[in-house]
Every structure is written in structure tokens, then in C-alpha cells.
Length: 209
Image (cartoon, rainbow, N blue to C red; front, side, top):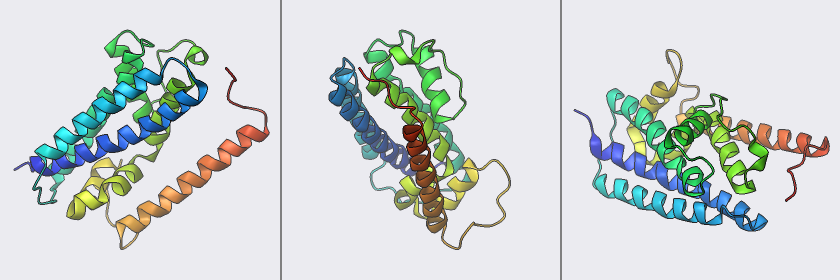
């Protein structure tokens, strides 16, 4: 049997995280005082609404997860995360087709690297930051799920790790999976900061409005 309550709870938690990510883009939009402020504001409210709905559906969850549940929650998370992620593009009118917006968002979250936008530089700073953030989160992959959802998944964390992995998993990286995930998280953050500093020192600055 599929444990739907746990799946709803996990997806709801993910949407709260996505709303927090959009909040950072809203801050960017406000800082540059561009026309994407409303798009992010509406997107955040809608994302929180859906997150609360899923959390309500997942109330009284027993926090257990089987392998089938893990595979399902990973697939649904990518699909729902990407569908919600289209809102800043659609509400702001930067992409007029849901198909295009979904492709752009899914490409970011799965780190595919493809895009349908001809000239990214004409977009507002907040939208560019959102597009870049989807790609950055996509690079986290396994770490994103283990760190973000470990408190909710409890016994199912290893199964989610297996569902996200590209090959057979014979053992954990560390006796405690959360410790391994935090170590990879730290490496990812360190590399991101190092690359950012290199771009800055080499003159590859963010364009000015």
C-alpha cells in the first residue's frame, strides 16, 4: 500500500522550501525595483497555500516510507516543484506558454541545461536569479532531499536516497545518512562560494540596471 499521508507531508514540506527560495528572489526583485515583484509575491502566496494544503492532507502521518513510496515521492516532487516553479514566469508574462515555462523550470531542477529563452539578459534580475536558483537546487539532487526532508521521512530517508541515486546502493556513505548529506551539502556550498568569488574577481559581475 502507498502511504499517501507521508507523501503529502513530504510534498507540503518541499513546497514550503520552494516558497522560501522564491522569497530570496522577491528580495532581489525589490532591491532592483523591477516589475517582477508582483509575480514573486503572488507566486509565494500560492505556493504557501498549496504547501499548507498538502500538509493538511498529510496530517497524522506515521512518517514511514517504503521503496515504492520513495520512488513515487521523488517523481511527484520533481513534477509538482516544477509546475509551481512556472508561476513567476507565467504571472510576470515573461513566458506566455505553460509548456515553455514548465520546460524551463524542469530543465533547471533536473540540471538538464536546456532553455527556450533566446536572450536571458533582458529578463529582470529576480527572474534571472530564480532561473539560476532552480539550476543550483537541481545540482543538489540527493542532498536536497535528504537534508530538507530527513526530519519528516524518519525511517524512509535511505529509501529516498536510493530512489534519487543513479546506480545500485549497497551501503551508506556514513553510518548516519544525515551526516553524509551534511558533508556533501558543505562541499557544495563551499564550491558555490568559491566559484562566485572567482567570477567576481575576474570581472564577471551581475549586469547593472
